[in-house]
Length: 568
Image (cartoon, rainbow, N blue to C red; front, top):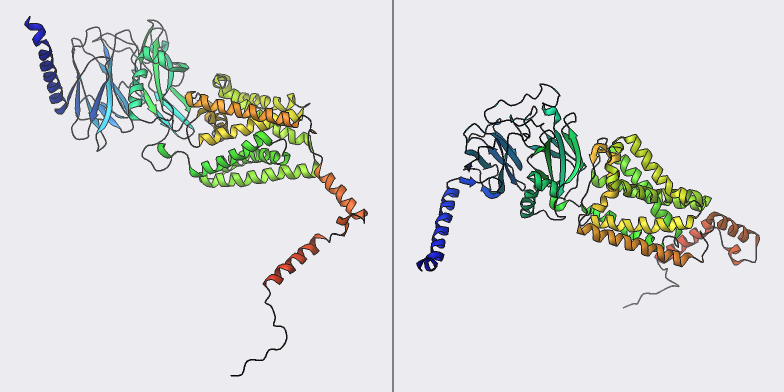
């Protein structure tokens, strides 16, 4: 009967003792790990943390130990010296420990490179003798066996590189040769699957990253949560390009698969936000420039007006479409041919867009050709329609890596829109006003918060500006924010189209030719002397009269008559 009475107190005492032992171990720089279990660690620059893994089973031949942090670099090493050929440095780094016969304990050392304390998460994964060894045939990087994925990014594209894997082998045996042959008994039979995982949109927090990294570290969880983008063979280069998504967290990992034994192993996952947390320019917290917000907010206000009233106000519609065409091509020219800053390019683009819009209005006023105007408007709608198609997974097909195939297909789809609606130009114009005008609202929203829908057109602009972007995979997340913004875009487009169709159903399709009306009015004023407008003076004389009236306002009044001063 004494056991139930003292059992809670016994548990409390044991818990306090175990907590005290863990605290002492942590303060002494020693951390105990178990296989497959993540553990958060706090690292500093002065005292390295010793990570120890005990009681390793005899069937385990390889252990991959990895550590991850949010934005600060950490170092991981086999010894306390942290030499270049036995350690790695970065926000996502790991080491491969090849176990010796009878070995049951492994030790690694962790250290922060920043003066402040850095929070990270660490884990170790075991692999057997038939499992492939990630990075086992490394010839490019410092470590002899390098399971890491090396990531490099800019505002347009993100590139990952990794070392080829080798076949697994038993403890104490010699590793298989990496260049002995290309048969089924060599590493050339291995396959590599590249996976991508998106973090929640508009969330750059440390906690979210460390929690979601656990879903992309082990083979089974990677296949369950990640999206497989590409499969590589040993004949392919072990580097892959992706479209950069500044401000959006992305995790990449690679699974190497041995088809002979049907075994797999995972590399060390790597993450990026395609932006910097420390630099002043392109900082993650201030990605969206003020100039960009002003430009696209103004553009969205005009687009919203065109969405609902574009066909009624025909010249405003022409100005809007001309602005888009001229602005797009001028931005491409300014970016590719000059080294001007982004803000200067944006200002010049706005000026060129204004000129393009006015030129299209002037063309309509002088020639009155509905056909050419509707061709330009139809191409703008076709451009957006084709961009939407290539924004889907269809755009990542291998055939479209070829620029010739891509641009021919893209142009055919864009030309298809004006060709289909050649017999009903009014319908085409109303559709273009509703869809293109409402999409400008999406671009304006993207200036204030992240949305993948902005990359419908941005990925195409990147392909025009960068020669290497054709090799990049353009997969983007589609989460709650994107669903809401897509619904807003759809409602605005449908609403604008329905309003204009209902309002214009009994009106003439297009306004009459402005130049002909002007000539007719001028001839009427010249020939009809009874018309009051016939007696209106010429423009030059009217301007001179106005100037004379303005001068009279500022002329000093002269004294009238003689005045005698008072004599005192």
